[in-house]
Length: 343
Ligand SMILES: [Zn+2]
Image 1 (cartoon, rainbow, N blue to C red):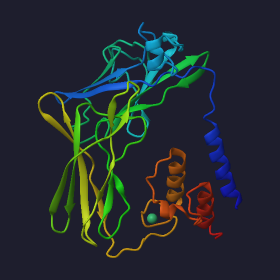
Image 2: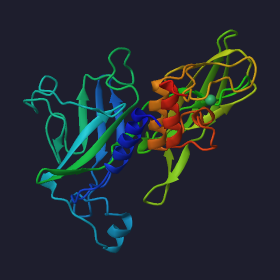
Image 3: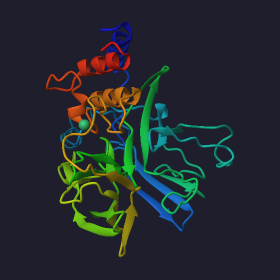
Image 4: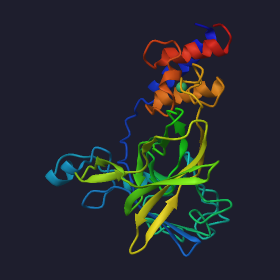
């Protein structure tokens, strides 16, 4: 093993162990109740920072059982609770004095618990003149919006997870591509919540040469059991498309359908494109884990991301670089060695 790959493995081990906890209680994960775009220009984000029956913010040991049975849980000092807003890929939202002149005199990324002002009434944030859903230029965000609660005691901090609400579905590149099939993948990361009123997805697939479009209607959501015991829909999933034309190029996207009051609201994803191989056989070089046609440092980072997150948005066949039958950290080092030309 080369020194450089040893270094990367050491950094990885450090990154994994750096999750080590401090003694400050971790705030219970917040919830996003609703995202609404009203009148084309006004955006509202309704959120819940979790409290007990008495309205005290609580730590993550406050379970539904603890609330109902009077069990022990940790009450947080409300004065030490703050929260931040994130968009898309964990981009921290900045409240500026230019946009919110009544509320801030300097750029601000954390609001105190219970903050009231022109931008917020404690449980709803108002973003005036920020287009998202209807935007064609400079959208506020393109995919999802999230919130994270912080608890800071004597300069030491613990934070909840970032909890996202997926407003737009996000279509990822195709996976498991064969000459006649591929998997459309608009799966979401953990800690993403489904937007209100979800009733199903419609998947649109167009053969670019013939302009023939197939619609797979009413694909249901995956669900999980919430802490309250009910089945909650999760945003995103995958769908296997079969019986396609070898060598053809397909454009595809998904529409997320919601009932908000009477009308159904359709929220489309971005459009992806895939060209199927003319013949089967895998067609990708070992190490090309993202199937972009080259083995590069991008494959290393994608493989590391996949190992750290447990996501399998990469080709497991191409990721088994050392042909051990499993995808592990050893494949990362083999891949790095190969890129450095020692193999
Ligand atoms: Zn592959």
